[in-house]
Image (cartoon, rainbow, N blue to C red; front, side, top):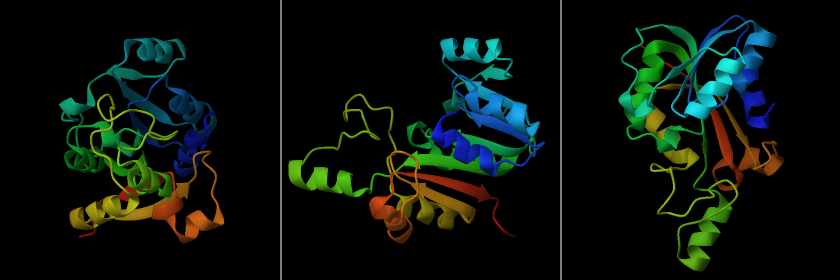
Length: 199
């Protein structure tokens, strides 16, 4: 299984009800079903990936995330997962609110635009960075809301979301000592486990 999905799988409790937003070919849900007895559903828009999910026995619904999650009632799931997709939805604030309306907790992962290579690229070339973890040019990128880890944590603070856990890794999804000390400068990807606002 992909390294990033392994990190996510470790954050999901056995027997949980899970919704995977942008589930792709269903690899995470199949793993959780087979290894943690998870009851999971995925949302996906790509018909080829949906076909793969069905072949692998993964419950999948064809749905565009930009249409929202109003078709799910409150507290439908224990965990809602969004892997490297938040930066490509049109309304990320509303998406986070909806994830925590239908799920008790959520896991969000995204690339860090504050990584030192991005900063150096902008400084040295004066152009939008293109890198291994941000491989698209500015005019064809699906990433319309790029942010840094500090930006995201400020948003969570403004929305009063509870950051339960955070893991920051490099491009190989490995943790390094410098990343732990300066995550917004050396971290490539972050994994946030979020809870609802504390009342």
